[in-house]
Amino acid sequence: MAIVFEKPSIWRRLWPLLRGFDLWLLLAVLILAGLGLTAMYSSGFDHGTRFADHGRNMLIALGILFVVAQVPPQRLMSLAVPLYVLGVVLLLGVEFFGITRKGATRWLNVGIVIQPSELLKIATPLMMAWWFHRREGQTRPIDFIGAFALLAVPVALIMRQPDLGTALLVMAAGLAVIFFAGLSWKLVLPPVVIAAVGIVSIIAFEPQLCADGVDWRVLHEYQRQRVCTLLDPTRDPLGRGFHILQGMIAIGSGGWGGKGFMQGTQTHLEFIPERTTDFIFAAFSEEFGLAGNLALIAGFTFLIFRGLMIAAEAPTLFARLLAAALTTIFFTYAFVNMGMVSGILPVVGVPLPFISYGGTAMVTLGLALGMLMSVAKSRRMMQS
Picture: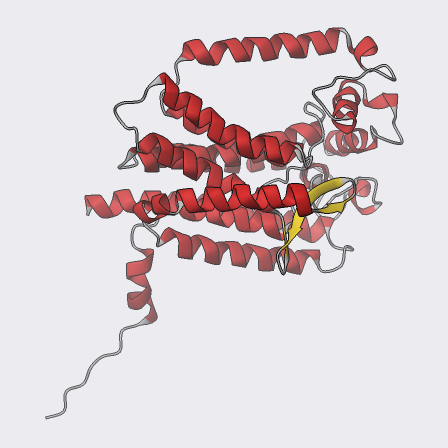
């Protein structure tokens, strides 16, 4: 009598890999990806193959998410030190052997041209989460000083390139780890107060501080110009202020319901610079208006809320700190991009997650989401 073995279906073979996935997190990602494809189709309609490339990049990021989600947090923790050291070594390589484009030295040729600062967006919070996990239950002031030093090294090297946008993202992720590790509010409030006083002072003395020939010392000249342009974009409406002014015009002209899909005049008459990358939020706002913006903000809010919930429920200190830092990266991406396009923050090179065009940024997002999903899976697998 012959024995017949039933071949398992594809679903039954995939189920062990999908088991434990956080469906709410996945839903938030799919909603934002859908909005991103819609925005890219319109803003990149007459921009070569941007839409097709954007879809391909999303599929690559989804594949990375799926693969990284299979790696347990304990294995991710073992990669923290090697990835951090590799990233810092590559940043030092950029310092001495980097490739300069448009006045910035951010790339390194290692057979292929790479941008090492992208690796540090993930490696820095990973390393700092490892640092505090090793000191769980016995954290001392010296440990926080060590954490600040670990953060200062990549941030300083990235600032020297100069790349203010990436430095802000790395710094935000690192500070999130330090804060959630238990940094006292007594140490948090003074820098916040000093920063607030500094911002008010800059606004109050803007004419004197932004006069020609004034040197701020702590900032590069182009960074000083960005701050001054933010305070008064009409100072140079056809030059440095052009980006901000056109973005604000596009957002305002969208009104409540927008001009309609593919109907944005500022977008398709090419008044919006970088309309498929850094300023795609302006193009989206023009065509979908305040209603579309609220839907987009709701999507990011849900993603961030879900990430914080995953962090709160994580089974270990390392997983909790890592999930909180990765969630902070998404918040910083979205807040800084929308803020700079809306004219409330200086213009820096920070894309809008899932919406802006960019292969490297999409890979970074896929890695971050995969790690976040790994943390969610570890908790669900422990409960089952």
